[in-house]
Length: 216
Ligand code: HEC
Image 1: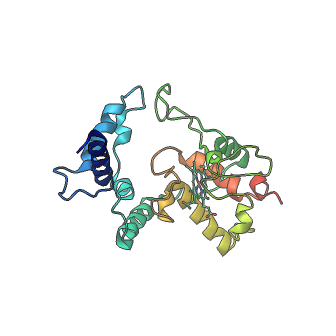
Image 2: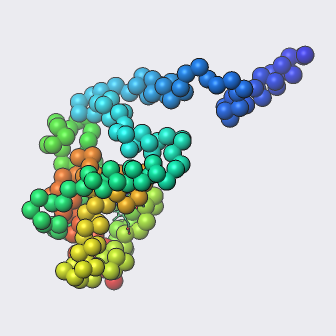
Image 3: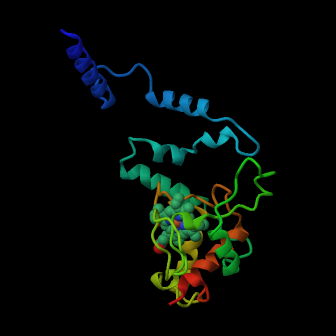
């Protein structure tokens, strides 16, 4: 075999093994190599520690290439539903103006923060969602949240439909996977990124008729 042919065969073999086409099973779980690579690539600094690389069981399941069966997804959904805590004092709605500031602020959980509790995290909703007509720049990973109250039949927050929308929205902010397991939306309350007071302000941003989200 000449040199060029040898190279071609080697390339094909490398390609096959990348596609998982090896005839024999790998001697160890390739995800272990990945974990080791991740651990070696980051270091702890301040509150931003490598503990963040540790996935909880639901995240592990969502990250697994084998996640395909409905039962596993249902288990993640149920765990998320069980994690949701309604506000201790029964108050779901805060001030939409403070909610808007949070939604447009993507800062927080960084190594320069003194502690996770002391850092007033932003919510960064704008990174993934359109929130108002006036917004110039926003991400589109999530759906537009404009006209949120109307779209959820929550014109009157006191009636049954309005109450259902309030509970659904609180759940979405607390643990988004309760409604859609493995969604790209962060599990804000569950992971301690937002506290209940901040969640209340974001609830108002989405549901208060005076909020720019609900402007006609
Ligand atoms: C990293 C991207 C990302 C960020 C940041 C994010 N979301 Fe989401 N959000 C999504 C995605 C994707 C969906 C659609 C899938 C789902 O429902 O989980 C979604 C869905 C939603 C829904 C359900 C929509 C509906 O009409 O039922 C609400 C409400 C919501 N997001 C609110 C927020 C708020 C408020 C914030 C800020 C605290 C936020 N999201 C931050 C990605 C994100």
